[in-house]
Image 1 (cartoon, rainbow, N blue to C red):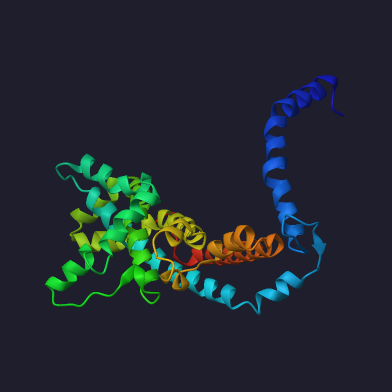
Image 2 (image 1 turned 30 degrees about the vertical axis):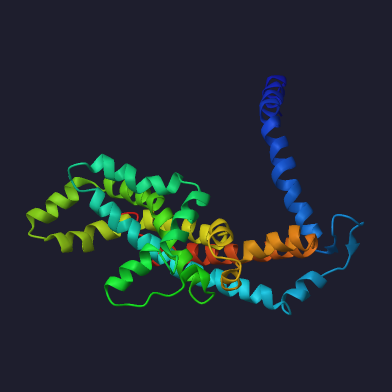
Length: 294
């Protein structure tokens, strides 16, 4: 039995936890339950909600804009995630070396991460301008006719991926750098004494021991890629946005432009289901390639 002192202890514990629990219920659990229920209604914010059952889910299969947005989101993720991880890992390897001015370069590579997408999009819209942009100027020096980039639905998505990799790689670089510095120097020194060259030390020591960090970067980058919105909304011109509309953009358009709150909530839950399924698969597959000990 719980004594009187134990009851008082629990009262004090619940008293201190109550602000956090209240915030969790009001701002997290409540909206989640509300949005799940909203998927069974048709509601334009001006008239009373009308119950329609699972019709919003059935409408997804017949909506070409949903399939186009899903295709654009998947293509963006397939291009963006490997590029960010590769660039970030190479930068981390470089910044982990005893180079002169290393602190400056670490700061310089992180500046794009804390920069606003509004400012970044303005810079990249100039770089990708087909008439006077830097990208087509450099391609012209090589004798290559540059595309219209952000002004063409066929190339706008690839241009956004390039800008996104430039902006976001700094964050993953910091994570990889922390992982590299957590590898004991004794392993590298012992391998060097045994005659292992730089490539062999990278292959058999650095890469296996960096896999826990790589797994974390993969999961967070995948989730961020499926939730991409800012750059898709800001960078391509209106005509080219036909080739870059992603799921979050479609959710915002249905909620606030077309006032289809129930359909927007349905799209949100579909996006959640996709991210959840991919995360579960990654968690299952980590046993095959993530090493926590040599």
